[in-house]
Length: 161
Image (cartoon, rainbow, N blue to C red; front, side):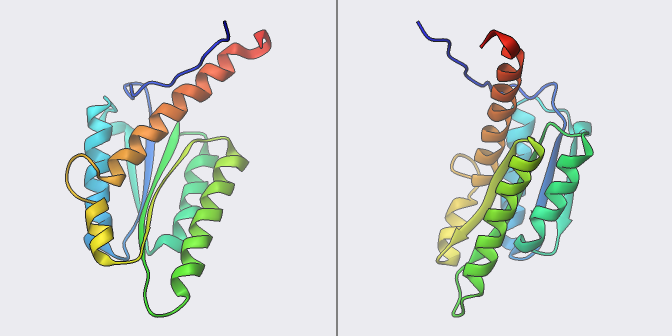
């Protein structure tokens, strides 16, 4: 029988950083509310949560890297909203945020939650930031807490693999 590693959603011992973009704040503030609610539901103490606000999604990876490289946080939750417009700007910003956050996670080994919405319409962004179940900020928190647990379990195996 193979060994199986599963994460949990227990955040009671975690220190979590959140980076949230101010651009499209009518969406990102709802994502932040969902993330904070999910962190509290997972047992993360309020005094172990730090929120940094940055101008937009393009700037999120730099702040995430600073948190991840500091060694003080178990994970970083990244929130933003890039909504398609009439110019190719959407494509550049969405790609930069995606590539940047992936690179931060791989370079630092710190779990990063990708809670940056990339939607075609405002309505889609609002649907994904709705209060309660389905809020992508809350889902990002659940994902990153699970990844912290998986990472710890893998490291615990050490030389027994």
